Image (tube, rainbow, N blue to C red; front, side, top):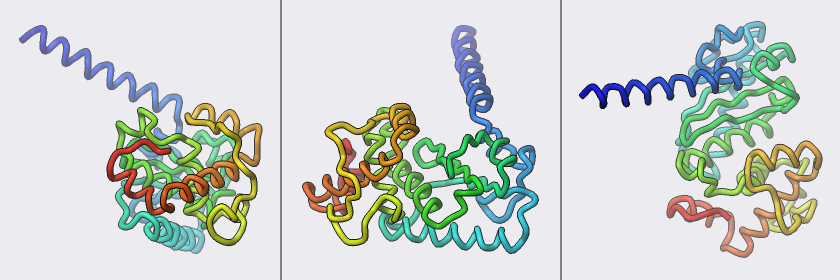
Length: 235
């Protein structure tokens, strides 16, 4: 019994230290754990905004979030992700949450997500893109996400398509929407994606085109639902 108790204490201590390390390196996770500590106020369930955000801006953002989640539901069906949204209207607030210039970032593990939104990310397209990630990861599941069952380029390209981002897509249908043809290889991991995206502003367009080409060869975008449900690797 003493040995089992020692092992349990060691495991729990390791988990606690791991959580503390994550909170240290990712300020957004500290913000999600204690939004008021980061200068945020609750606007509604699951939505925390910068305390200085006026009432009309909070209401407008809440409406945009509902619309964005509705657009994601048009593709995926009823939401499965459990998420917290942390929204800033100033650069100072964004920096407190670890922002480094990105319009928005999703931190997720399976069905649980934290979405950090910078001032320049308070837009329908950006919101839809991030919420698409949360629903994709919820359907992948934690283990599949950690083990890379879906390549990062596919995850990002799919979010571009669901958000219908005109910055990276032409109007129309199918591969005719491609703005930039993809190379033979695209980044497969979050680390390699972040590194290459910082250098290549066309990477999101390339990824969206690659997903469109995959869909054309595999029975359409609806096939993604089947692949996720059956636990297959994507792509």
